[in-house]
Amino acid sequence: MENTYDIIIVGAGPAGMSAALYARRANKKVLVLEACAYGGKITKAHLIENYPGIPSISGVDYATALYNQITSLNAEIKYETVKKIEEDNTVITNKNTYKATAIIIATGAGNKKLGIAREQEFLGSGLSYCATCDGAFFRGDDVAVVGGGDTALEDAIYLSSIAKKVYLLVRSEEFTGQESYIEEVEKKDNIIIKYNTTVKELKGDTCIESITINELGQEKSLSVSGIFIAVGLTPSNDIFANIIDLDENGYIISEDGVHTSKEKVYVAGDARVKDLRQLATAISDGAIAATTAIREMKGWFYGNRN
Ligand SMILES: Cc1cc2nc3c(=O)[nH]c(=O)nc-3n(C[C@H](O)[C@H](O)[C@H](O)COP(=O)(O)OP(=O)(O)OC[C@H]3O[C@@H](n4cnc5c(N)ncnc54)[C@H](O)[C@@H]3O)c2cc1C
Image (cartoon, rainbow, N blue to C red; front, side, top):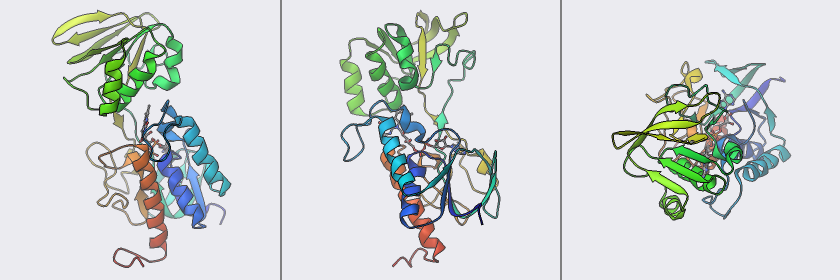
């Protein structure tokens, strides 16, 4: 039947596309459903320098190479948003209804909001969650980056070559990101690190003009025209809560990193409970999810893998 597939993959980020690659190489009929654009979050990476075997590549170039690889194998991609999956593996999107023997959920995770007043109002008017997408609008300006992890550190490094001054506002007294990024940040003269600092208020008429921060208990005003929020991720798996188990933060629970609580529904990438949300682990997850799904379609289960 036209709308029936061996495997439907939800999300065309690195995990979803890696799953599609393995599934197509096994000659399965595969449909990838993507809500926005192929590539997922890695397209926001200015440069990827920690993917084994590729010393340096832009996120967009990497995603495009993977996309070309799977489409050359005739993986079908449709730009539709999955709204619901039913018990019998019927997949309902904003446009169509499909049926699959196996489903791989690879929906990743989105940006966590700072949760302060006017955050939504200033989005696109000085406030951004993506330095590589919007950094160029702030050439020669002073900007702030909020966060202490890898993304905040990467954003600050990237923005330091565009903006005049970059305030890096870290809630705690140390970074949580990689040592190599920390060292690079510390070397940049125009990155000003402020530990024990939170953002209290966003100010401006139509665009951001300044922010009020609390640094070590003292309120101060910083004159900036841009603020980049990089305070972590939040998944959007609520639409799957009718069929699979989620943890208290909304990540998909998987005992072994591939199976969900429902038979024939698998998970891959940032959407699942895991310790390291990176490109290498997303790619690995996608490969394992597709391979597991294919094995289990043949009736091969744990303990019977040969
Ligand atoms: C700025 C930035 C820089 C980064 N730099 C690096 C780096 O240098 N090295 C590294 O290893 N990692 C990096 N990462 C992390 C890396 O991008 C992620 O770990 C990786 O993209 C996770 O892949 P994923 O496929 O699980 O999820 P995602 O990339 O989040 O992709 C999920 C996809 O699912 C789609 N989707 C979601 N819900 C639905 C739905 N209901 N229906 C249909 N489609 C849906 C989304 O639109 C998205 O395309 C970076 C991340 C960011 C934000």
